[in-house]
Image 1 (tube, rainbow, N blue to C red):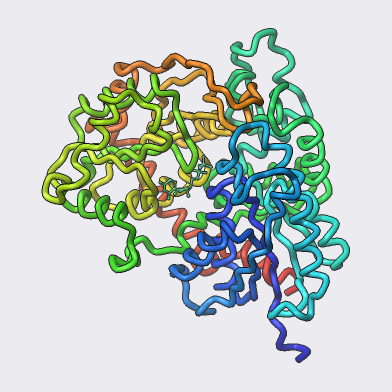
Image 2 (image 1 turned 45 degrees about the horizontal axis):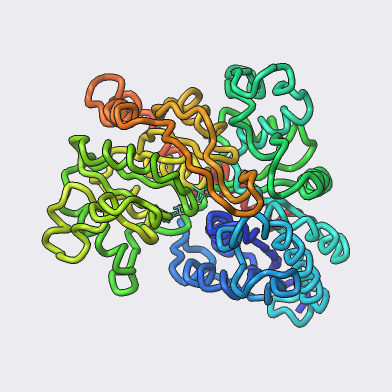
Length: 502
Ligand code: UDP
């Protein structure tokens, strides 16, 4: 019926990793709370992740609820591209050699989604009015143009990192240094020069990536052609980066975060919590306020065994209780594995233990929001960074790869809410691995136990320096919340995305 049709936003999260799927689902929830009908297209293996988040959503304001969100699973044609069943995320691939096949399958996935959207009137909420596509869904632009609707890109990066990347593409500051380890400045912000080395830059500037130069070029052309950028941030956070990015690219840049606030951590339902989640919350409940160090390296952050051992030794010896989320610890030496596994069976022993190790999936947003957590040792993934900001928790920074070294500089130097562990080199992941046969070289630990301890001491410091970091973190927490409240900056940007012509 004319006049009563809701705007219908189509969201297609990049299935590179769960960390792309989580924030885009949360953006869908926020858009729905602003009165939009939302369809989220994903693959069958990823659909339960999306659906369960939608089911648990508690938006910051309850105007348009329950959300009009349809989760549509489109089969991922991995087999046609030579991938085994279930290869529906980058982190589920066998080796870097599968990455090009994954991108080939993604193109076919795009054709299937486009076919689905072409029959617009058969979609429950009618024809799409806007497309928001994950960073590698370059095909989404053709689809949006065919539908005659705007196309936005969502990278999963923050505005500052995107601004630095834009600056590097234009000014090539990284090419003036002779060595990959020589620091140079990226003067992307007027009052703050980000100093990094070439080795620490995201894969866009790396000569060898398993993604391949062709894919990178295609993504760059996609970025240049879209109508705008949706960013999980808020305008008050990144020293004007969103506005500078808009000026540098000539595109709309809509900061709509922190999107994790689409879920109230307090709403975590004990009846539906996983065993790991229940264990974490019970363990935290038994700890003193701000006494715990939370340690996590994201959804896919895997350290070489030698590095895990050094980190583990620091965590056992430090005086604070530690909640440590460990991924990919299968190849650890037996004695370390034994230590990691202890305390997992006996509930009383778990509650009183100094160190709780989670080898599965931890409820990160709820953990960060728990009053017992005093600091976060993080890999500086943008999702984790923003979740820590939204919870007002100071960070110790240990970037691994991608744009995380840029995020580290923002957290430590520009925002003053973090201390750097001092990592100088990236850790290989599936995109940056140079050996495409999947074999793993022995890698030495770059960061020793003492270096980790020093960073944790500064993070948990009860003196003036630590207090100042905590004060700044609390200030940002308040601003984050305000951004999503009625008439806040992210609230207004969400309105602009849903009702662009009002
Ligand atoms: N996450 C979580 N539990 C885990 C590991 C990760 O909830 O055990 C979530 C975390 O809250 C964040 C995302 O996964 O939303 C990780 O995203 P980020 O951008 O920080 O890092 P990435 O995984 O891309 O390296």
